[in-house]
Image (cartoon, rainbow, N blue to C red; front, top):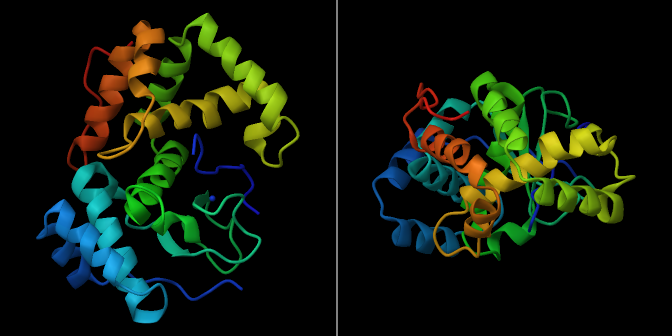
Length: 235
């Protein structure tokens, strides 16, 4: 099991590595979103069809959020039975998944049934990968938590006590870990939900006006090309 307990939230026998062919990524970037989604739905979920499926989904995720091109070293693989806490996706740090030395996202079967498909799962769990590795994003997450309203922090505390306390993984060892990692990254998942979702981000922004500049900076970071730095103004 992953050591930090990251699962796709507000909503994650080991198989061989899924190697994303560069030709498939090129194809994904040459299609519009509807064509990519249609193509993904036509592909099988095993063997070569699955490989191309994940390549197209990854290309679609990077098309929406080009900053994720920095994270092509993160492997994407089908889920093994008993690995994910949900049937969507889960991020595993380097060495956190048996048979993989690199950070890995395991894709659950529910990913193909949700609005946005596998591309949404990839975006959701790449947020965990970026939070694990990128100091600039880590700083923005701290700013986000610092600017949450007392009411929202109270809500997070209640959710932790009632629904998550006792879960395995460092994210659930204490409320501070839960708030600064699981909860904050979940807000970013809402922020980057993408078209067709039922995100609560407008409600989150309305109840946390001091956090809006930080949320805007996070969105611009992910929408920027690789090497993008956070915009000034977030505090």
